[in-house]
Image (tube, rainbow over all chains, first blue to last red):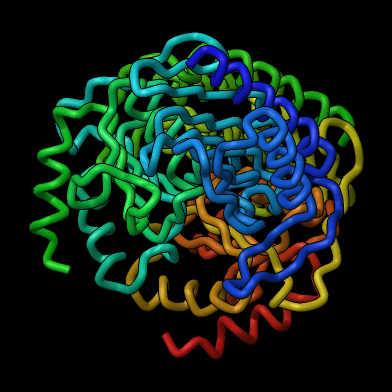
Length: 257
Length: 257
């Protein structure tokens, strides 16, 4: 695993170099079918990281956001999201991140959340998570009322029912912030916030988050509590204090929406 | 005005020193009647800035968030919000800011948005805005469809009608981000994003924003287009490109909500 972590760090170093060149500069924007902004930086990073992975581990699969999936011949798959939080990137706000995960079969076992402008990097295995090389732990949170909660956007929820469910859950704790992106999972790992709640994430959006949260001692799953794998549907909840999870699960189930 | 700007910078330096000591540390949280988190840092900054203002300009009024208003004997009033974006502060996300404004009568004529962790500071007069000392300008945005839009939280809107109005407005531009705080107005002044749309702001939340946006060439007003003064109701919209304002105003008026 040490070799894997060192290699993942070299990927993050490289992606950071590219992204720093593009952040807060004018650049071309291209619309995808879902109209989310995709930058030149996004593609350049993914292309570069794919080349590095193919060169170092030619048998491993690669799953990215921009290019076709490369099937694995080793049982291992790298999952890359060059710029998670493209909207934050586009408005010049340094809360986006580069996500890099390694999966064994469909299960994430190593994850990196890298914020290249603030130079903050979380690296998680299922046993330990570090931020900038130092071990971090989630914090205790005795009740939902005290929880610091964050989500990315109300518009990520499928419909008013799902937003209603989120709203219902989030109304309880008065400390709800929005505009999370992957960065908020790093904040949970470091013990500065407690709950992240999202919908409609793709595998490249959440794979890296799993080892980061678990390695720091937290709970991360789909909304029903099932393990996240590359095949999960994209409803993601992370709770820093695993002892708070039953209360959160109860709130999700009993939501009238 | 140069003397005022120099003094405002010294206030921001001081508040930044205090805030840096508290950011991402454990601290006591005290609930206010509206349950918004108020930190020790918040009070310590406001107390310190009040003392500095009273010492330098004893005739000026002071309007803050935490302590009683001091009436002006000079016609000038300083408006201070130590930590705008307390939720971001509490989750360890450096997108909160310190807001400092000077008003002549009820009209903001100088404003500071300071982000002490990223060390980014916008200082605006009605004629010019600088970021870290360098003049900045809003960017052109030819149509609402191309606009990069941000708001702080859907929960700031009074009811589903007002959130519907926001949603209706924001659905058009696909580049909508949440979690803005005062920082997004700095991003507009620097030409990295285009529109901020908020409700239920207090005078200490928006006074500093007015000179920052106007000095950078942008439009800022209430939702009807009226000038913001200390007596405004707290519906705030900023549009980087003033030529886009008529289209935005039209969208607000024709919202079915």
